[in-house]
Image (tube, rainbow, N blue to C red; front, side, top):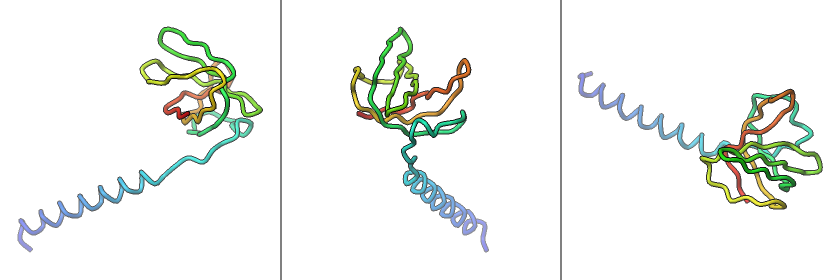
Length: 111
């Protein structure tokens, strides 16, 4: 094969591979998790519940989400969320441990 043909073949294969990865990543979604089943840090979760407490600070907002069990959620202010107490929300984030308790660091919140 000529060098030009090999370069074209490699470029086409790379583009097709990137498209396949993009499509497969878009189709991956988290299943909803119940708060009482979150037992360890280090994984991503999606929970739904009602905001029972809301504590806004300068750079961070602390939420308490209830399903019937409760979980603390940390929302950093660089995120644009307009939240109020008693809102029903869906939170996607990573589970972290702080002072011996599990909490979720929010990456996405939907109402």
